[in-house]
Image 1 (tube, helix red, strand yellow):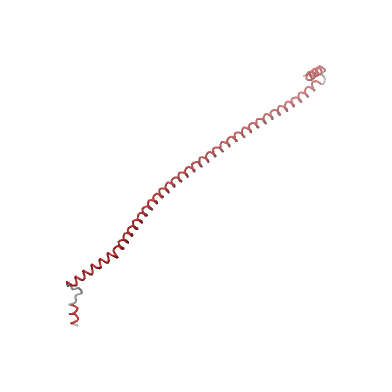
Image 2 (cartoon, rainbow, N blue to C red):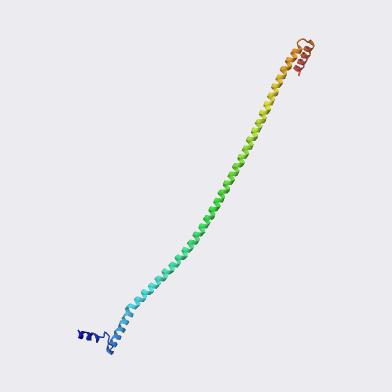
Amino acid sequence: MNTTLTFLAGFAPFQPTPGLALWSLVIFLMFWWLMSKFAFKPIMEGIKTRENDIQAALDEAKKAREEMSNLQAENDALLAEAREQRATILKEATDTKNSIIAEAREKAKDEAQRISLNAKQEIENERKAALVNAKNQIGSMAIEIAEKVIRKDLKGNSEHQEFVSKLVDEVNLN
């Protein structure tokens, strides 16, 4: 076991010798030339394409952000306009309601005045009719009373009868 350890202790994976260094350099340069010939150009083109795609995506995102900003501004403007229109419509509706109520009140007031005036006129007409009727009845009663009194006074007196006849004749002439 001791011999195995000594063998391992003397082992070095890379022992730089001039021949090995020269061949390593030649192989590396050939590898580098092959890579530049066949791999670096497609890799660079792929990286360039990827860079262009990323830039295009960033430009599209920026454009989309600007469009969203414009749409948001338009949306805010439309919303403000809608609020303004709603306020205008509500104001017009309130004004219309108030004018309808005022007009209805005015019509009701005019109608009440007309009814009151008609009622007063009717009451006045009824009062006058009742007064005329009362006067007629009183006059009729007065005539009846006067007739009875005159008859009683005129029963035996011929002078009174001549006077009454004369009055009757005058009434008939007029």
